[in-house]
Image (cartoon, rainbow, N blue to C red):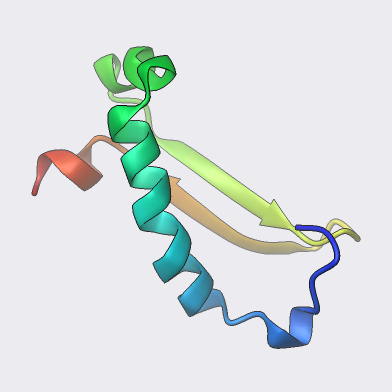
Length: 67
């Protein structure tokens, strides 16, 4: 995540905004099918420009098969 003012970043809001989008991509994108078929768990790691870890968001088929 480049050029972001870290003092303005609300981690919970970021996760709440990003996780549904990531789940939808995992659930619907054709290029994710092989991951879905193997029930792969994906972790998206977001870092600052300086390499500081900001947040990890983990997605798996369980996130959409339970609903």
